[in-house]
Amino acid sequence: MEIELSCNSYAFESLTVEPFNAEPPRSALISSYVTPVDFFYKRNHGPIPIVDDIESYYVSICGLIENSKDLFMRDIRMLRKYNITATLQCAGNRRTAMSNVRTEEKMIMLSPGLTSYEMQHAVWSGAKLADVLELVGIPNLTSVTRSGGKHVEFVSIDKCKEENGGPYKASIPLSQATNPEADVLLAYEMNGEAQYSVVALFLVVWATSCLNPVELTSWLTLNSNAYSKFFLSIIMPKPLNRDHGYPLRVVVPGVIGARSVKWLDTINILAEECQGFFMQKDYKMFPPSVNWDNINWKSRRPLMDFPVQHNTETCWLTVRNLLTRGRECDEAWKADPQLLYNLQAKVSGYAVSGGGRGIERVDISVDGGKNWVEASRYQKTGIPYIADHMSSDKWAWVFFEVIIDIPHSTQIVAKAVDTAANVQPESVETIWNLRGVLNTSWHRVQLALRDVLSTKIMCLSLIMMFTGLLKLL
Image (tube, rainbow, N blue to C red; front, side, top):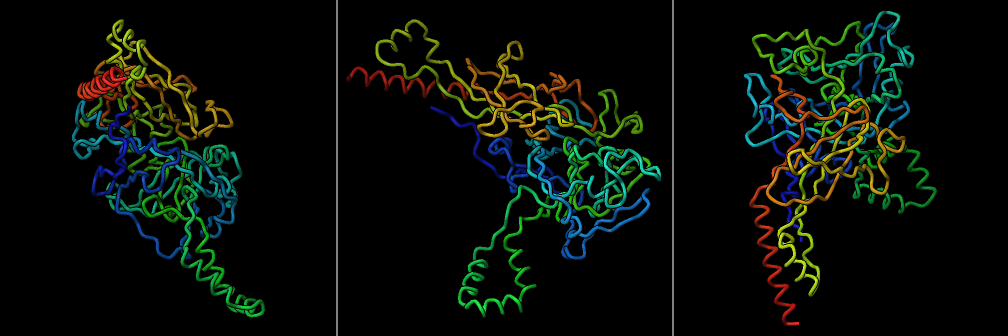
């Protein structure tokens, strides 16, 4: 038998209201390798901007380049389209555990009882930034332009209070932006979801089928532009929705989500990295000794690649050795009464590392880290996962699962190791920081005694019933 432990509710949980930030429960994340758009976390720093006139929307490319250029959506769509499978996450993943250790005045705080698992996975479609920059004369694999540009700044339409009402912005090195292997995208689609108007399509088919070939040819000739636009509106893949950056956003794989700027307005080529608030006065990692009285923002570089980490979900408990039969069953119980109580748990979750590094292994413990069991890893059903192999998605999370004995009430602990041998730290206390970011410590899931006891009671009831049936036979 199986006992579900809260694996079914996919309702969004609000982290903050203004600006709006929300996420689905952890159990929803491992329900699908590619996170459905409706379950993808929402992380904002200001009101969501509205772009109504897509025909007049454009992105300006300017700065330390010889020729500035405005690119309309039709210009970007004319470039080769790439589909990049990538996991995005906020730098503040699992931040509640940080605030449980110690709370600072300006720590990112959540609604009571919430944990923050702002990490999800999608297939992003669009033009590579390296191809876009070639349009303004910056070749692939360029580290510095002729005018001294070394960084690429992304400026959003989004306005936020931290920038004194100015736009949200962030930057990455030019060497990364011009490297096709870095897969930095200007994305205009998410998960390749197509939108079809069944009613509209039926009406078109019905209307055209009523015409003879000569009338149909004449009708198409007279209405070619309108018909083309109407037909394309039916079959075109669904664009990004407003929450996730419509009409155009940046996706920087392997890097904290704060650099994947949504609602893109401008691309600046700069000599120095972006000087915006979220590059210079936020999303930096400080030691536990730093507080708001002695902080020196210039002493730390902005966070870029996210470290190796994971999240765990204990999905069910099951009784083992319950249905052995007849005399063998009786003899086994007399020899080892503990068989009545031994339980197993299916432990599953996801692990990911920044910079395109694969997951080498995930270890699970039920005795506080004294003994470990290695979990199996996978990305796609039926395809073995091999870290850093060409068959694996390099920018994507890796699912894991293991069935492990649970002899009593316990705390399940897990840790991940990436291909560079980076391993998660044991304690959140050692990596505590005043901004509450980058909690990569071992993830712990408490299996309450009541869960185990309720299972044992059910087991004993079934055993008594089963024994009674045997006597009748």
